[in-house]
Length: 279
Image 1: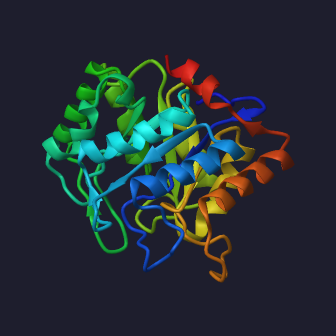
Image 2: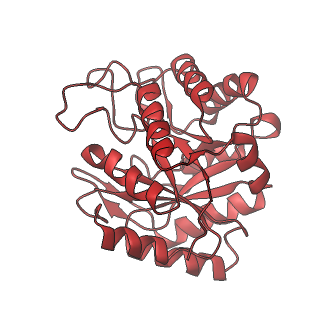
């Protein structure tokens, strides 16, 4: 069973993702300058870490480490202690070389964390392919380079895979995970399913709950009440309300989680505290 984090909880910001476009919402940041500005605004409100996706000049998702380096450099100028996560998603491309490109960044540009989805999964209109060999290879590269995997877990099979990877020595002592709820092919935001996902995590895991689309706020509330953290951002939901009448800014979504936490007498873990846990 994972540990509760007392009054402090991690708040993960996922500002961009791979799906939202300017045509869908004008508030999604896609250029390095826009992403940096959004992260800065949210950092001033209070976040624990940031989960980055990069876009090319046309606005399409890219694996290019040079784009990631520009974003990371801009963020580290104002928040040198903010843990930064880069995406190794297999949603748009599955080959290892592309997915591991951002893991090659060095020095001050080296990410603190990188996403690692422990199995393949379906979304509404596409699949994210994560073969067992690719998952292990990515985990091995992260371990060799001192980058903490931020595990992305959508169902109980993925949670079970965490224990397998840990036994194989492919995960660090501190396990960091995001639990996703609301995807129609994965775990849902019911107390039973949320409890099952949490209970399958290794002892001492640092975890945050995330909800897809309409389920973002519901998943966050369950997670905070259960002693975990929360992930938020336009990557997961573009609306502030379930009636879908108000498009959200990342700062709006971050502020909402702060309000939820205050209701439960919990506060966002400072980035520096999380950085210390990772090291």
